[in-house]
Image (cartoon, one colour):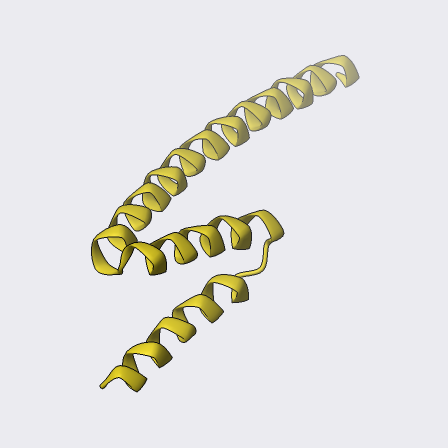
Length: 85
């Protein structure tokens, strides 16, 4: 029975690894599509200079795993708009 249990555990672990791989692939596809859509929205919503700054901050925030980098850029643009009005 021990070999049967080991075989079952091995099959289960392979299935889990395969499921995790599919999960990672699926989530990555959705996230990448969302980021592309966000970049298009930024380009449509802001001036060329502002959009370039926000795109740079977005990529940098992802690379450094620091959301605040993008948030600071958004706050900066909001403050500029408030001062113009």
